[in-house]
Image (cartoon, rainbow, N blue to C red; front, side, top):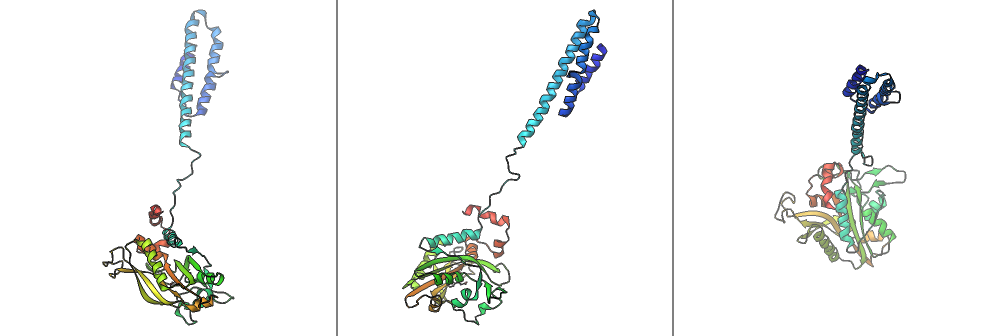
Length: 341
Ligand code: PHE
């Protein structure tokens, strides 16, 4: 019997549980109600009296060691479980969520809207797919005007006549003039399309914010003052503006507005091509024909309009040298504007 106990003891001492299942087997085999230790106690009555003391101690020792071994692995396996449980936070999202940032075009568009809304301009929107009337005819484009040419305009095949992707948001202003009694003071931000080869400086679509102000006795001086206010708010108090005569079918007189180059303080650099000024928008007094086309009495009302490309303003503001970056969705480019809120 002593021999049997010794064998079991060394078995217990060498035992290592690698899993809960192994440990449970070990427990059943030795400590269970039909286990080896129970058997030993059952056989104990057959041990001769003079050996009872020694054998009793051996069995007890085996039982204590077995229990200790079991307890040891029980807690170490449970420990593994609990450290596993700590690593696994089931309430966490599968992958870290990166916060996005507003697109630079949205940031600049919102800033333009904010500046003009402080002097009473509202925001109007309209369709990107337009008819000839709203995009061209009402705006005094003669039928043979080159801007209607396939080169500049994306036409949409339609049985309803000439439908095109709008080439400017002046089309929205026509819709407003047709439906609103002056005074009108509104901005039309939105995406426009032109059939141009894509390069660092041109794209087949871009964004505009155009403005329209119609009331009694609106003058060119009002236009100039409004644009000067805008330029200073957008580019800084020191900014100077310059108006150069230009031509648009829907305004008379028409002008292009330049702002002093903030990169070189008008001293001349490669951004302003050594002129000290940067062109940022077209503007002018709304042609009386346009007012009449839209049902507004041109004897009573006058107005001014202006229109700028949001990409161009964003490029100047953030010193971006390639227009294509705005529509390539490269996160490395976009995440630079996180702090621009
Ligand atoms: N609609 C013109 C364009 O798309 C911009 C403009 C608007 C010019 C209003 C003058 C007045 O280029």
